[in-house]
Length: 491
Image (cartoon, rainbow, N blue to C red; front, side, top):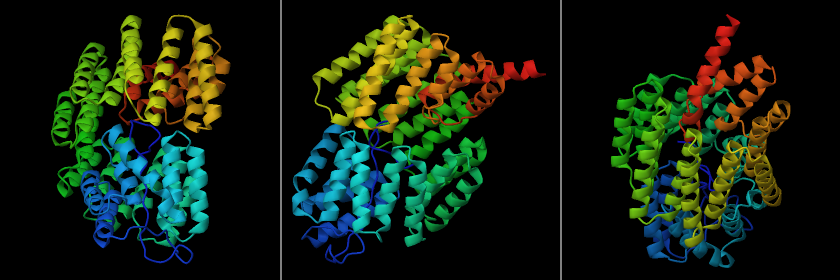
């Protein structure tokens, strides 16, 4: 499983690790930790190791035990925030860590402030803080690894690779950086290098599930579905509770066209998922699979079921996000009225519930994205352009690269809908190359601009994207049809 980022992508959190030692900060080669309770320290070490290996539920239990021994344990509270299953839990534990940051070492303070800055949607400040920490502790392999994760989260890929290599150079038996490096190579299309790195990751942790899950993600991307399923099954043999792998068996079956069998695999994943939030979004992922069959009505019906589940479990942040997902599906279906109802429901939840700042901003951006798409479908380009400019201003103020790339994608889509294809190409080329929805519009813009060869390359890439998401489910069939059409013209 790929390391996951706090600032938003499926609402999951930025993972980081710190090494505990007893030396004083002035002499330490690695960041110290502040607690007077030896049992709390031991539990923290246990939780940290579990956390490194993506055994989140077990790590949560260890951190809870550490905090029972020392409730003011700042770093334990940070980690407990990062494995929280709800926004409320996250906020509670991060607040406790921040409140105690003046009682810990300077290195710990920098880490706490970095996590807080990222939670406040200020990733560049978080990076600055971590860079300062690495300058104080240049031999801390975990710190270099964490800085790499923040760089990856801000699409600063070259900087991320340097930090991952620095962590490995400090200790080539330290496994976590190999995981991130493998995904970095995968995302850049360097599959042979990614495979080699993931195999090293497996060799370092032969009894852990996550290395097999990670290399299986690579094989899925490569279209080696059976080999991917083999490794996902191996992950489940090593850890029967590794529900990510069970879900992704379903993904691969769906990509092979075995829709019933794929959804059966999803149901198994839902059954073993540990929290209501996990189960809800896994159910939504299953709902999205109907879009590969162009069955919008069934997808919307299953999304409604996920929303009801979130409301019954009193998880407003999940319900609000699901309403925005439903709105996008409705927009793609062409049902503007239904999309408006869903967007209004999400906005109402946002206005009437205490959510984290990061969650609020995420939901606001999802709402603005859907409003832009709705306006373009209604032909109201003045409104769409004005909203796109609002996103631009927000991105400039926050210096958030992900938000800036969202601006370029939406601006490109608006230009495309106005038949300004050349300018649409220029804007969409600046958007996130890992956002398959934007890539589809880039291909369409190339096509309309007469750049058929470029269009064909992007359509072919989308046709074999092989990373399940709502966006991919919405565009895969269209991209495959366009790719086949271009191939027929060439013949």
